[in-house]
Image (cartoon, rainbow, N blue to C red; front, top):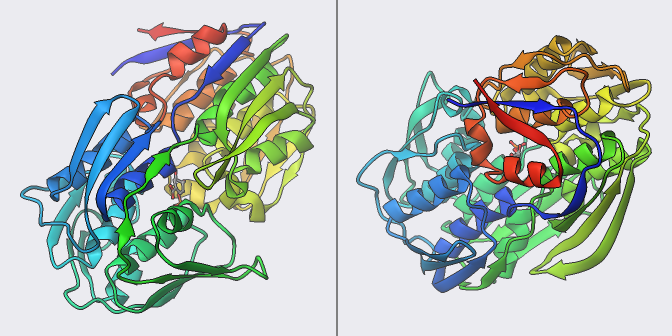
Length: 442
Ligand code: S3P
């Protein structure tokens, strides 16, 4: 276990490329595995979470070659072609890997055991087991909904129409991936749109996916089952959820100008950018283009004076992973920021509501949890810091407090930085390359 410490800085400058999008990387490996022939993936995230997904697919008979760090080849086995693994699949820290793979295997006539690290084994899996059981899959889980668990795939899967009980791209994706090897039409109804990378990628590989979105409060997404997926090239854009860290660092530290290149700007992922712009952030979007069905651009960011805002609950799905770093921006803003409707943060890699509130409090910032809302009172130029924060096996908590350390009076430490490698292995080198002072903490 390695700790880190981050000290105050000014003058962050430079151009950076962040690592590939985690959500798209998982999906490229999984959907590529279901295609016939060879799928080439460029820009795959080399984070631990994605490497766990690759290993799990290999254990189920998919040949995956890492030709170079930037070029992977997946030899798909076709829809329904996974074989029973010889051993338990360990998805490490990855909720996305675990939940999407549960969906993918659910309609194969195989039995698969899943486990994960201490964090993943506390996370609810009943939300995935419920729709899968309606399709004919059996899920036997510890304590009813925790890993380790066993998925006994349906031999004759039944298509369902499933209304999401919570806005979650992971639940939606698990049902759609289960729908791949199911005859007929599998539909998911969502009342708050969540990231649509699964839908876009299934289409990219030739599946028929229709979306009725004439009313954004009731989207019906329908997949026609048992398609023959054609292998394709996938170019993974930079992860907006990772870009969030250099982005906020540049906004809140003095005299900064940073360009973050090649960032995926899917409209269902840009809630943080919208919110920061409302707060007064100077973010220019340059070189906007389309890359394999996903919008991509460069972000040019300069030091900005931010003002607190109210972030409405309906925006949460489009920035669900960004609340820890938004809370850091809120601490650096004038006035109060109220982030509404954050119940889902309680079941992420850690209880992020508690982790953010405890951490900000330890750094001398006024913060309150009111029901499912988080309220941060900004204290620009006057953040004491000087605390050691527990990262709670949560990469985004660890990185957020390293950014807060850049503007506090005294450096901020985290007890354990190991999990940063799940999503952003180059975080320390990239930030220090811009001028940050992040070093080892004993
Ligand atoms: C993800 C969806 C989100 C997000 C996670 C990645 C995905 O989870 O928090 O990091 O790739 O589908 P939920 O769908 O559970 O909100």
